[in-house]
Length: 166
Image (tube, rainbow, N blue to C red; front, side, top):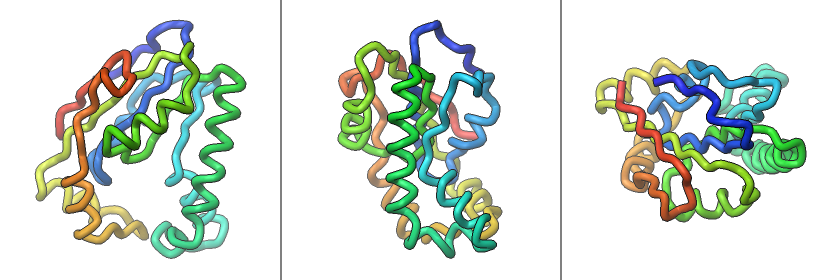
């Protein structure tokens, strides 16, 4: 499913799903106007630092997550100040987490949830094993599956898009 930009109203697309569900792949396959759209992601910041240091995501995750989160929040504020569209690429698993993030978004923004259904266990395992240098322990994935909640309009979303598992 491809998105067309919805309107001239600034929009935040909160992408929701467990690690390995295809969030980043879904984003890459959309027709976002990247001149007016900010990608908000701790992973992007962690991967940048890892590349600068010649290390892997897993090597630097614990020492950089705090800095990556701070940078992401600064990028969010800049995007809002510039009235840009926002694509928020994190797991965003629970209603409480999503509500707290949506509280940072001005009322004039359209708020779209993009929920990626988890793939089968076999497909998820294949995807996670294919990520070089990014190892997420099985117990962390199991906890993500347990926490994952379907988004609702009651959280503050104007629209919910459900992307089937692939």
